[in-house]
View (cartoon, one colour):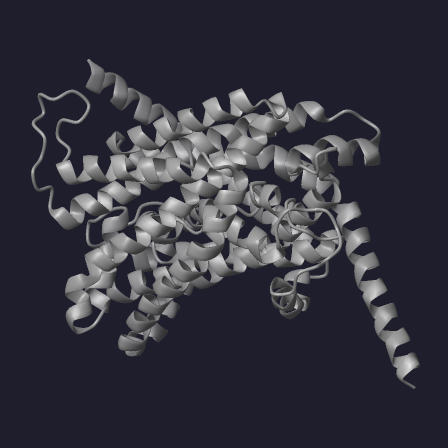
Length: 486
């Protein structure tokens, strides 16, 4: 009976997921295209300046952390299983062309990320104790009231509720811990499996159970220390883990350089003619586009409204400046890291061998890495995945708490209780099925994006005005500087 109910539930949420993501993928892409055009493709014109701002700290302005720390905190939440498992899932379902649409979505998503993070700094609030809180709920509530004179707090509340759901049931917990323990099960070959007669834990290996418990304890050790501890850990772990992972991907690409041109051709052709390359993959152009877009959004979170909550904490007097730094998150996460993963999967043909989830990427690393690294691939990838997913869990606790704080205020007892509930979600994550986990994550991600994008699009005029004003002021300073030098 329980199996029947679970099966029915899985089928229902799968139908909901499929129906909502075709129009939502189009909506998110269209929003990114519109913002890119309106902002004169700021993601291209100002990309070098964004990198320069990344490593220079402002002395003026509100905020608790540097621009670099804010970006690392945002990347902690975005660089996760989406970069390893999400890419594999997208390509397995939509063919190599899904990677093309991930990159396209990320390119336009950079403009979206710029806009939402700029707005987060502009409309953030600072209380009498110097505590900073910002994010979509404040630019939806305060920004829209300023521009349109109407109360949109109800839309901000909807966003905050969905944000908590994404943290507890979507990106933050289930999908991350489930992917980690799946990788561990693959490496240990399900050694020492607990008998099915044992409730809940039956059928799972001891290694999976121990991994789940240890990760829960490690997450608890950080999130119970609050925002400052999460930011401190993210600033150290994120750069290290990203560099290590990219290094291994580069080894695969250089080792298989002869196959790279054909892989790129397959990706582009399959983006518009999925069946011509994918063979057994069912569907059409929309299969590649929707899977690529949804997994891209899962990975880089452009338009979701999560990164603005970290950006609002940055010490800066210029919203545009932080918007530029924040858009680098989408560039690093998807255009660099996800592309590396996707190329490794396509080059080795791992997407079409009957595997799913993390096992696709493990197969790609095993086939693509040379010599002794090939044998060590499952262990290498498992370590990378653990670091990736661990920091994502930490980042999304911060986001979920920000949403909760907007709804109930700074009630320490409520926030502490939420942290324990969050830890409980991490603890039970390993025992959920992969397909159900990712479907739930897709649904709540989409629901969170809708109110945020409505707010951003309605405030596009403010974004364009602030952007022009900032760069006009910069130009005036340059001209005055030249005159003084003369």
